[in-house]
Length: 289
Image (cartoon, rainbow, N blue to C red; front, side, top):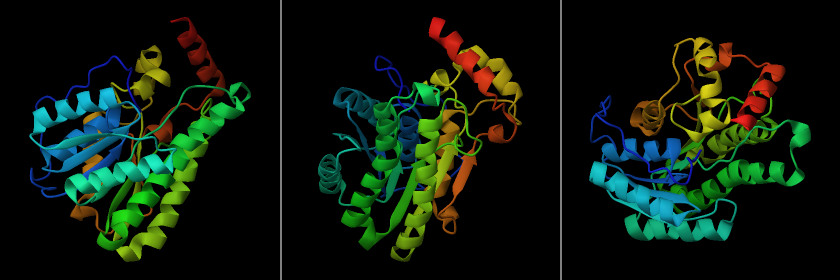
């Protein structure tokens, strides 16, 4: 998810290394949605482990700002590239730029996404289509291009940032949940077909993550206390938590892990409310804030 356009992204203060600081030295990551939110922090965590990055989205001004912030904080190269995950020609150009700059793409993080609260009856045909195109089609498009242009011959790891919306039929999330379900299925197919080429494909599914537009849009401070009480570990996740989880997935410690989902939500999906009437009240409250 992205943040509000006016927000200036900030790097982690006093980052604590769990893995060796040179874990990803000599590697390159291509990160969609990397200019903001969770994917900005994934880029930061990778760069703190000596990985260079290419961050992509539709807003070049935001990308440049974020790339400068990331490079200043980590000392690694971060190349901003304007790209629309719905447009294959745009993706091909972006990947060619990345390969010209670095000569390799070891990791692809598919993080570009769109979401909002809406009952099914309130979804226009175009709204549903747009979310599917950004999330599901976008994941396919970028993965296919990077696989064919680099990973087919050199191997690599693809990590798709998803969610658990589809598992219980989360209220007001039919559009995003359908897209995430499609990505989860796609991940399995890619893992099976591309595994023999040395490519691992995984999903990482964050739950409620602090300081993200996603949390604000899907409840935010209106239900903060109630939602925390419903999470087994008794706290929301941090963006840093997801960065470290994705770091593990791409590392050699996860060489046998492919075609599946790592749920990074503190057990939230097991215990949190899935009440449609309650969610409608939340949406009504948000509309008057």
